[in-house]
Length: 323
Ligand SMILES: [Zn+2]
Image 1 (cartoon, rainbow, N blue to C red):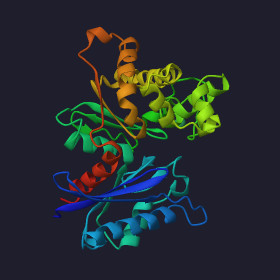
Image 2: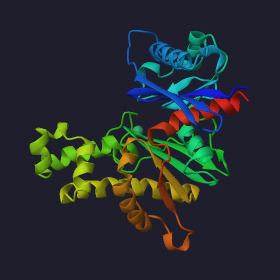
Image 3: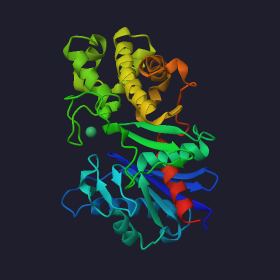
Image 4: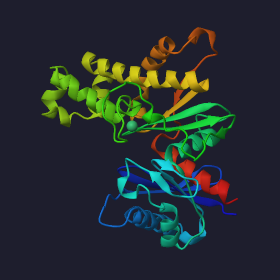
């Protein structure tokens, strides 16, 4: 029994570690860049960077890393035994037994694993925007799209623990190539990188002239520049937000068709623009869902913990598996 746990959310660009109390209070926070060193054996660079982060956070609280339960949320197909079966956004750890590597590096048997978006869903269900809701889907809009499905009050894991890879649902046959090797995946359209692509296409067609003038090139226009401009009433920026919102709603409508889900919690970097995106997405959803008016209301809210929900959920996984 431990009063605190460390939760880590490992993203494609950075890893966020939180010291979390059993009631969900965040007591400490550190982050570091995710290493992509391919000279080492698969997973070793990741395990070694995470071990340093965990030891540092533990030391700030006067604790030893080996004595604290640690939950790790990793991006990709996460097996129940700690092996990261496939990770297109963390290729240096793809296929590696990150679980064993990290246990050895920390000399700890208290290290537990879960897919990153599953962690976010668990945190929102326990403490956040999904509290008291037994059927909802967590959708994390970052570089890609992650998903965690809560069904009948529990995480839906599937046969191997890989359920909820919603970002790779194909929404356009023969569409844009994806990091997973497929084409037309939802995350190429409705994520931060989807918005970047829409920005480049719009600039090529001569739109977004004011933003282009300020940034210098289409590549230098950030999604935040577009959301800022849209918030200030720039029609061309609002048009792009509408497009990304339509793609978001299309994927949500598919999830409604499969799962009969009544609630979505939207997290990840793009959710910072949720004041702009969600009203449009709600509007489009009503057109895209089969029999929308004959169903109970379908609600979409933003995550209560923003970028922290994955790491908080990872800590929750540690509490649950080390009671
Ligand atoms: Zn894909």
